[in-house]
Length: 340
Image (cartoon, rainbow, N blue to C red; front, side, top):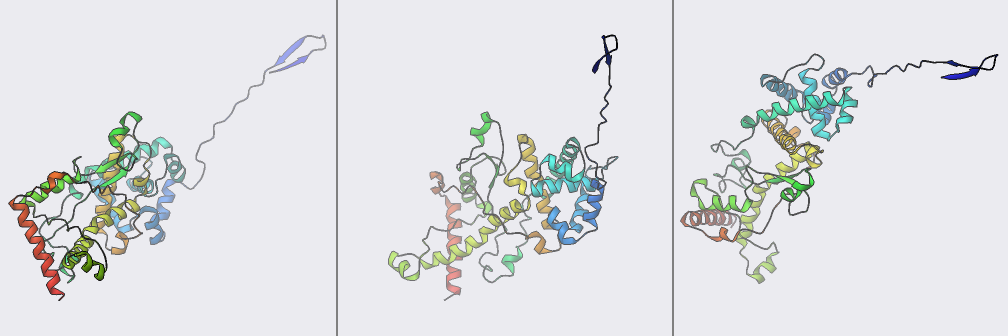
């Protein structure tokens, strides 16, 4: 409003109406659909770097998710929704950055992220589970270093911790022995030592007892300390097989960077993200034709909760436990005799 004098010395007012036209937030002509098409028709290596899986695996995953309830919307196809989800979990992109990259509002990105996550979690019973307990893994069956000594071994078990963000009053329940809050990725919340004890004492599990404690020293020190070289040979081969679990967790966390720094979501949503990433990881393992794709990237150092303070009750062995100890000794002696 402006005030000016008239010729008679009185005031008169001039009212000016200013109208501000709202501009759209995303004005680029390069839309999310354009980004999707660019990736689909672009270089295969670039596709893997951005989405963490190849095109053939991507199409299969989208087909499975649409069969499981994921649908196109008026403006966003199911493929674009899956791409948004993969870039977020693969690179730990924030909601704001994803909105900018895909030219959608934060609400749209969040809604479709949740839809894809729910569809993946619903696939967990089909894609996450134990092996068939029938076939011997090829890494054992076709390798004289392990076969026939470990020919009846069908897998290894372990857990891992994934960082999480929780409210202050919940932090004591989620704080691990390393001082940060995390979720223990186990079937339930039982401690590792109890799982180990039950597996050792029940012969139906056919669980090979852990390697005997032995110091890794050279031959002269070993003779001086009275160590058994047979134990050393067994421990080395046994540990190299068990290391497959650590390596798998490392590949899993390296593929999905969100697992190393999960945003401030609700606890249930954080849990679902972990499950969804495991589903995708297993899906790639099952359907990726290129082994290098599955093993791409150096695994980060795993921060497993390998607590060495074992429950004293674990020393209590019954007849079933002794039978498995005898079997372990049989394997150890077979390895030693084959090298003499």
